[in-house]
Image (cartoon, helix red, strand yellow):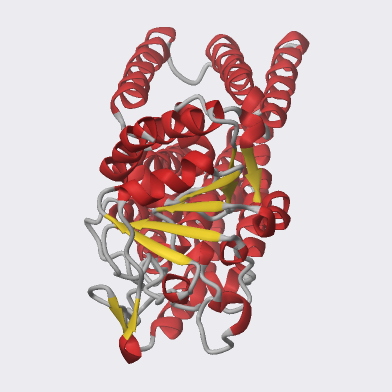
Length: 463
């Protein structure tokens, strides 16, 4: 490959890195995404001209078809479906890497050529990680789309089976690297990889989906980097390494936000059985909750000086972000201040709430992460919890028997007034009852988040 081709790959890598850096802030994320896209275009065109992998026509057609499909997804997928789309895209990335690596193995097999050990190991690792990513991402998509049970699915000898399959992959890798003609065993190896992906995600509950998505994203990058070593493509190695490393860092951040280890997330079967929750406005031990009318909440908000909105997945499902922005504007015109408390694992993918509120043009400086917003709850007049549950559960601080114990939460219970907007008293995605609902300073506003917020907007205007 000529030196200027290497320089083009280097330029693409620089754009990837700068774009990734700019993704760390909502204010610069759009520009960062475009920079990374330009970097990818440079890498593709460089490969097209100098790589001699496919014909010029074939790659151009693939680029046009892929861009068209991506454009349709971007325009038609709703914000509530964004976690599912991210899961699918992770899977497509892993599947593509596995296909490329498989093609290289079959090329060696067809010519009965011995595979160099370093290339052979890279091929098999790329196939394994790519297959795990592909099938695991499909299961994650199914859980998020509610095509598969969102709860942790366990079965007898689960860990033993996974251990046997893992050891089997090690044996198969040694066999396939030693002999490139074992195409039947290669097919078995692919099947085991796909099975491992299914079995590794099925036991993970829906509450842990943000961690799973970031981890699968990392897997897709690792598979791409391995494939880069297989076909000696420096652009693929660099971009794959960046995605793999950033995905692992994000996974660690998600685990830290839940005060749980990655091993506990992957093997702990958290959320395998639902906890008892109140079906109506009565809790265990005949504890009752205080229901409040929209008019009363509107009056509180109209005269509040400090309001904090805590969004959750229920806000995304109801598509109420634009109504929330309108409500916040009304509060601010009356002299109040509105901020948004964002928990790292709110929603079903990393950054879900930030993206949702950015879509409604909520000012970036109003979006506060957990560490920034927690000291402000004690001075807050009204907290609106919209569709959030587990991330505001006080049991995480004090109840050692709670599955959530030790998880850092948003300290909404310290505010003067807490208004929780929910459809019912059913527990959250983790299936754990929330004692916040029964506190003296908490009131419940039942109903669809979109309808309730829209009514609040009307009632605030009437105050």
